[in-house]
Length: 384
Image (cartoon, rainbow, N blue to C red; front, side):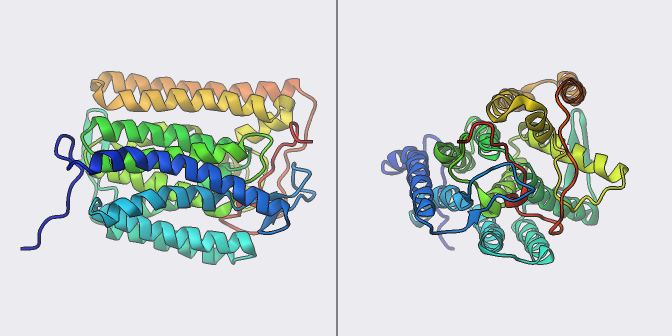
């Protein structure tokens, strides 16, 4: 029989694994900060793809859209070193394969125009790779309720979920520091659940993502000197979907816990999509209908909107970490409280709009589905 690969189990790590384990997120943090600075400096020298302002944009100067390279490289580099030392899992290998496919097509789109359908096919292929690796939604697990889904239904829902997470993260990357901030808070919740649940490899991967996103904020906090680009936002969306399904498979949490951790993005993007469908709008067209966009356009500005968003993300992450240990009736109360909160936020955004100077929130010309982040509106209230 082939020997089993070393496993990351607390109390059973060989001597050299402990310092390497502790160093991995530190490497991700500093590598991300360094590569982010290097990429933004090279862009100022006229090298690399740029997000050029146009009549649909709210930024007034060209900004590089290569930040995804900094984040994804900084996540993968220390983890690949650990994999070379025997610290790995098959799920991680499938996750890397899906990430490589989606990020590569997305980066090609950052460099130039890639067909919307090519991007969509890449997203579907990435989702199929995760499913092939055993990361799929097979059980409807709500507080006090557990129903096994038929294989065909579970497979279809998994495919839809992964593709939607990739795209909604892309759609929500329209404000400096927003998508990277969501990565810090959302993956921090998953990391804590992984470490506390006795799955340190899962926790380590999530922690490295947190560290890489935090390092990227060096250049992405408003006024941003660099954007994630399609490669970064789509890659983070795939990682959010993949790790949430992996955490469910490991028994760390039900899927709705991961949804709660990323609910500031999931609710805004899904609510906006459904609203536009009900209005018979062309949902594949870029627009300015997300709640965060409406607040910026209503005069809140970048930093005020972003900091309020961070408070919401932090609260969602804390509740997500606590949720698996609550009794079923308290879990339902938690879900009800967050549902009420998001309804109130929607109402509040409308009140803020009506009290402000009217701004145009009309849809703009489309490139097609899976639209690249470089066409998302960005505020310039804090830019020179």
